[in-house]
Image (cartoon, rainbow, N blue to C red; front, side, top):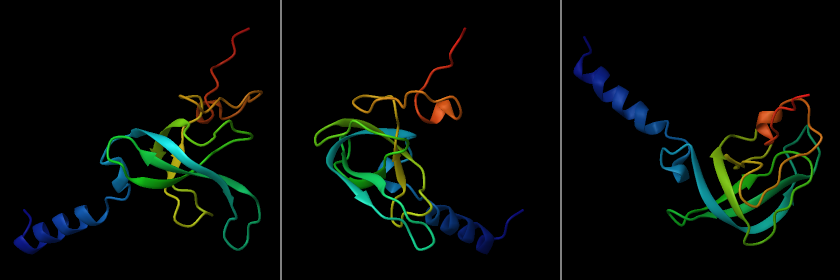
Length: 124
């Protein structure tokens, strides 16, 4: 049995760990791209990570998302599907765009980790 103090602490910690606030406890949300740009990662890494600024259709919140994989077809006003997923070397980016949905095309010629990039299993 929990004491009153433990119950209060449990409620406090539960509210503290809602991380992806823009998704409002949904697995994915639909949005429109406002701007597509390149950001550089934190200190030990060096690369050009493709990111986009997305306005969510349901709640009109503006978030920054990472575009995974090689090459993309995103432009201004493209429709995308967003999921909550942290990009470790990009500070402040807590969302990713899902490949193979709406205007963002699949990554072709992919044999490993296909589910992350929208490629169905090839049957021969």
